[in-house]
Length: 150
Image (cartoon, rainbow, N blue to C red; front, side, top):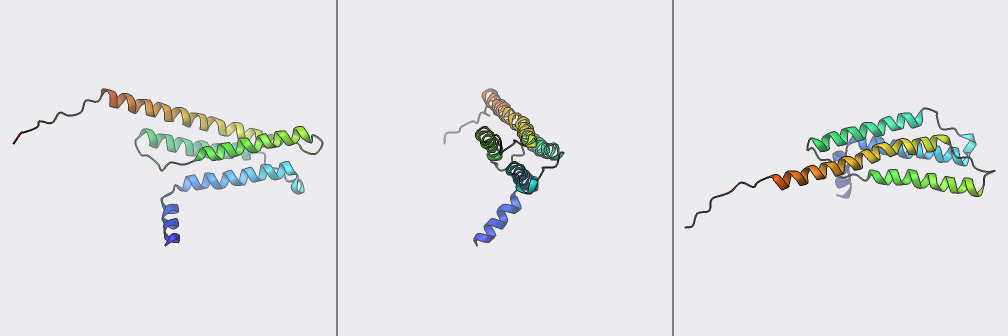
């Protein structure tokens, strides 16, 4: 029974969300591996750009749907955002404490910066959308119903 509920949950979830989630974990993992110098891994040069395009595509689709009134199930994309920035902070601290041992991968910083724009635009869009609905309900006159006494 529990497996059936889990299968229904995944079926209702946007494929684009899961694609972004898989990419997020993969790219973050590559950046961490490069930072820790596992077998001298190097994150591909174009990866931050490709990842940013994917995140921006998800952002555009979600925001267009929001403004058209097609609400998605609430996602917790800010967790990915926070995970990236916390990982970056940990890397900076380690570079500060052990400068001879660690070098901050440039692609990690580029990816964090690239993720910031869609995140901020989403927050702005949410606020504008909420204001629009607040104004709409403020000026919307409810239909008057006549009441009969019987």
